[in-house]
Length: 171
Image 1: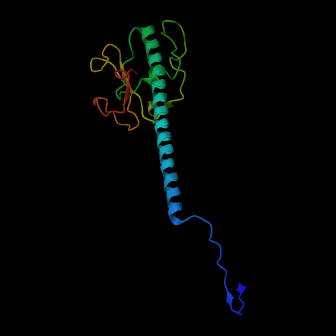
Image 2: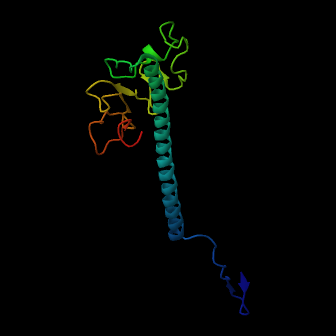
Image 3: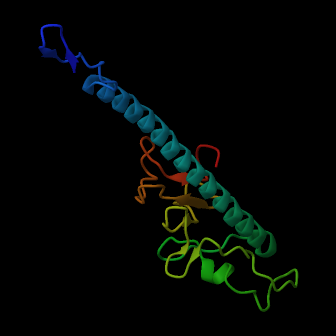
């Protein structure tokens, strides 16, 4: 407070308060939210691509085991009633006898993607499906596929399917 010559007092103007206005804060928050959405969207896409890569890798492991079985027995194993890969028959325990090479090891030793209830599962927890015979796309060999992220077998739907299979798209 200042006192003037006539004895009256006046107040000094205070310097302008420093800080952000509401509009500036809203603009910054909006920009941060847009950047976060872009980053999280990219992370979700990368995660999905990684799961698809894991699925293809697991399918390749199963295909190798099935091909080794065919090499030993001259045919692919018969599908189960549920359409699941015949895990119990082929992969869980060593074959005690009858394997032409005399080996007693299982065809598939990696059980990291084995679920006791469903059998061999994809990264989304759904059973891999397996089909042999004339109704298969690959009637001379076998069909092997995953229902994908949605868990629905839409292998008959050529468009809009998220299934990963061995008869299309080079898998």
